[in-house]
Amino acid sequence: MKRIFTFYKKRNHSSKISYKSGKSKIFSAAIGFAMLFGFSMSSNAQTTLVIPSTNEGSAFIGPYGNAARQLQLIIDDTLLTTLVGKNLTSISFRLPASTADAWPPTALTMNSFNVYLSDSVEPANRQLDFAANVVGTQTQVRSGSLAIPAGALTVGSNPNDFSFKITFNTPWQYNGGNLLIEMRHSGTGISSRSVQAASTSSAGYGTLYSALWQSTGNVLQGNFCMVEITADGQLATSSVKIGSNPVIYPNPVNDVINIKSEKEYINYSIYNTAGQLVASEKISGKSSMNVSRLPIGNYLLKLTDKNGNIEVSQFIKK
Image (cartoon, rainbow, N blue to C red; front, side, top):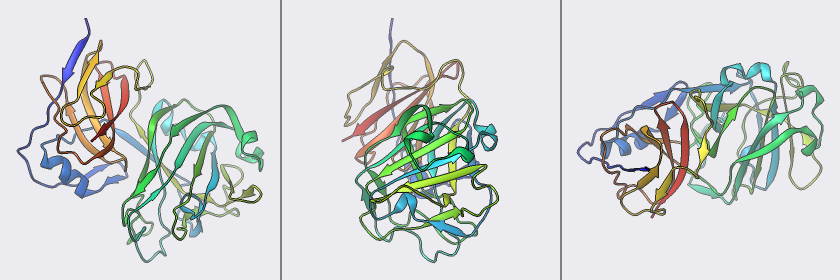
């Protein structure tokens, strides 16, 4: 017999808090929003890893170029040991310490920002050929537009914070090996914004990490954009499943989400498109989940069963 869960949201709290998981900071405004509707802010342990773990003063336009670009970041497996067996859920970039103002000056939406993950060749064997650097099958973990709130990339520290996450639609389990992060985006539509990077003359460039990019001309070597990778805690017996089981209905949703599944889930978490955790709560004993006062938009609902397995589905709040 299938279990049908209906979850609800209480509405009797209004305090604001700040939430921090490892090095990853979530905007206090988002947490205040979650607390306004009575969400518990517990979550599965997360791991954040910055590559390379230096504070070099170089920069590169890359992820936030004003025109369409394709980029690859190639990372040696010796830098990734803390992520083995975990689910990669987002990447983030930071502004150089010399930057005076937060970015962007006003909210913007990049028409497309697609991310692909795969195994890769050794950084020393990198070629100026995107396809030649891919080992095995590339998995698209993010697609669609990317909304960046005004001031999402913050300044004021040295180094600056990784304050804006590019969240994956599909978490991806890293099982070891060299990692290739490929980004294909449509451009910001405004002036380009450089992020902090390790230069091609850095000690680890070409041996521990490497990068290449292309706009309208030839494929070129580029500085390596310092990247923070966020991962959920280690999975149990199975990997993350997206959208097939459980069944979420209705979707899009106005008020109440129902979930139909043969599994028994013990908790849920909801993330917005900025990668911010807006809800996390135990499921046991809950009878409904009222999302009527969430802002209109896209969300990820992460469900964890009693064995620690995770299933993630997207839903649209209309």
